Image (cartoon, rainbow, N blue to C red; front, side):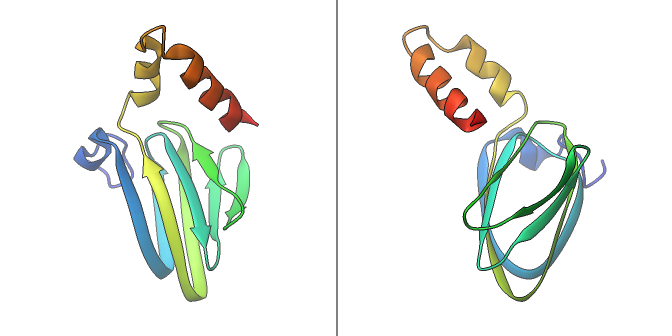
Length: 112
């Protein structure tokens, strides 16, 4: 199975990646994820454009979206990324109706 695949066993569970590096490159299709960085920036390339992500921002990538990340810095860049297991977003549609308003509020605020 190629490294850049959302079908990897690692991507079959929710997890948080917190790392520090001066250089990093990865390309492939990943799970639903939210990423932010501090002490520098990471550059992402997707089908929709190019993005520089740093402390005051975040990047939300959809499940199966193909992207590349590139970090090249003289100082160590801290990453904080939350990855959601395959199908996680779709499973939110089956939330108990009493919880649905809370989830809808969160989802709406993420779109802003």
